Image (cartoon, rainbow, N blue to C red):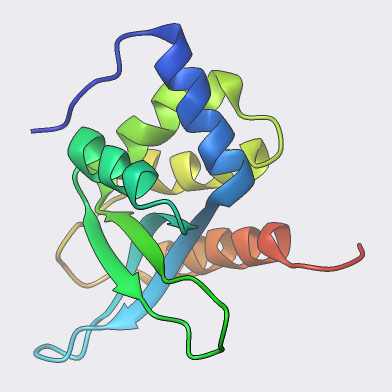
Length: 147
């Protein structure tokens, strides 16, 4: 069950984490059993603070993976990943009023989630292209470097 954040401070804190350390992704993959292409909304935070990642996991669910950097003098870090429509949409909706830097990415993910059709079935060509377009828009927004 998803924990709904009750206080303004917690929602603002979450938004700060997402603005600074978060990534919003629409993943396109292929189901190995059926061969069908699927699209999946993902929110991810990568950080060296185990306590922060634990709070995200306890509060919102999701998955945590510890990564040990191979380079000397680098701390291990953790990936917190939240995928699946309803949980992702809830996290975004709760943090959206406080997002500043990554608000455009969050809005694209909400548009993706709010217009999902035909879950678990073959996608029409129009729906496939719509999802691909949203994924492309998000990739452009996430692009690093000088604009």
